[in-house]
Structure formats: C-alpha cells, structure tokens
Amino acid sequence: MGRVTTVDVVNMKGKQKIVMLTAYDYPSARLVDDGGVDIILVGDSSGTVIAGYENTLPVTLDETVYHTKAVMRGSKRALVVADMPFMSYQESIEQARRNAGMVMKETGCQAIKLEGGENMKDVIKAIVDIDIPVMAHIGLTPQSIHRIGGYKVKGKTDAEAEKLLADAQAVADAGAFSVVLECVPEKVATQITEMLSIPTIGIGAGRFCDGQVLVYHDMVGLFDRFRPRFVKQYVNVWPQILDAVKAYTQEVRDGTFPTEGHIFK
Image (cartoon, rainbow, N blue to C red; front, top):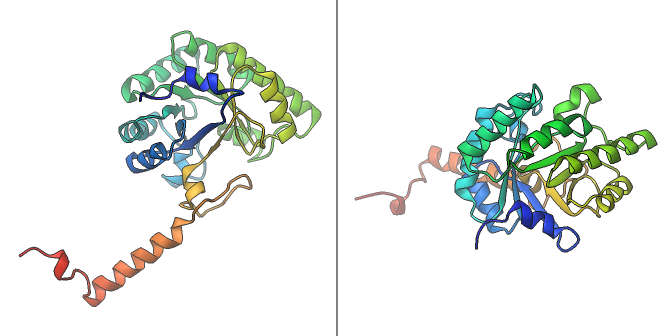
C-alpha cells in the first residue's frame, strides 16, 4: 500500500476522521506510522519538545530538513508534512517558494505547512502554483506569540470569530488542501468546518473538525514542562524511563550489571 496523498486527505472530509500526530525522528515516525495515523507533521514544535527552546521561533530550516529526513526514513504509509519555520516564508514570495521547494526536494516529504490566514493567501497561492501542496494554520499561530501576547484562544469575540472565518476562506481560496485550527472555540471551528470544502484539523478546536492533531511528546508523556488543556495524555512514559535510568545507574555502581548473560567469552 502506498502513502496517503493530499488528494486522499481532501476526500476524507465528511467521510472519515483524519488522524494527525507529530514526529521528529526515526523511532517516533515508525511508532506513529505503525499506529495507523493518516498524516505525520514534522512540526516546529520540535523547538520546544526536542531542542528545549522556550518557543518555536528559533527553529531553523536546517533543523526542519534534518528532522523531516529522519521521519521519511521511519514512515511508510502516512502523508508527511514539514512545518516551515519562522521567517522561512514571510520575507517574500520568492523566498517562500525557494525554501518550500528546497524542503520538498531535500526531504522527499509530500507537503509543507505554514501559519497565517488572509495575510498569507498570496504566499500560499504562489507555493501551490508551483505544485507544492500547502497545509494552512490559523487561530493560535505560535510563530506570532509576541504580536498576539502569548498563547491565547482565538475567536472568543465576534470580531475575532469573523476574522477567523475570513482567514479560513482565504487559505482555502488560495489553494491549501487542509487547514489546522489551533485553540479555537468549538462553535467557531464547527462553522469553519461546515463552510469549507477542504478538511479542518483541530488542536484545541473541539469535537467537530474533520480531524485532530496532537504533539507526540504531549500525547505519550515525554514532555513535562507544561501540558495544554486540549491534550489527552494516553500514556506517561517519563516516570517509566526515569525509573529505568535510575535502575541502570544503581546496577552499574553496585556491579550487578553487566551479568554473565551480557558478556562475550
């Protein structure tokens, strides 16, 4: 069976819920892919959960390419989408096309994602026009945290809701094949989902989007700095791994590892 395509994703709207998770390396990509997800997002969330940055802004194109290559080697079925990092597409249409093309060419991924609504419609159209599929991202856009004043739900006022509806229509008209809705009230996300012909993928956007996405490290308990309200933690491996490291440390120090079964003769 071949990989899921962007056409497959569009055709899932109204028929089958779309499942997306992040992954940033070979083992997590294998686990996520074997788990049956439809889309793997190589998110710029790597900045916080992998690199330990305070936010996503320091992530570079080189880091994106590195992580996406690893994910491509670890996955076989899922559509792989690479997140374009901050200031890799905002400067100009020419810059956006060049960098999106470089990421696709060097990694072999099937699509890119970028943040922004009406303000990015010309950029999205320009990238789509050179046959690079684009996943859009509106609502809470983490690359804009300094402008919007932090991580806040977007769309709570009538004016914000109207802006989100306009943003959603703009990215769809520009040619995006899907749109991520982050931290959006369920009522507004439902309006957008019903309005658009392309799928919506929610993260903190309620129950009625066409699909859902979570950050892998949040979902499995591998990130302990904070947990957003919208995250469901399906397992908490942090204390299990910590216990294993402590046990290994103790056994090395007291001489009980390695044992007879771990040596060569």
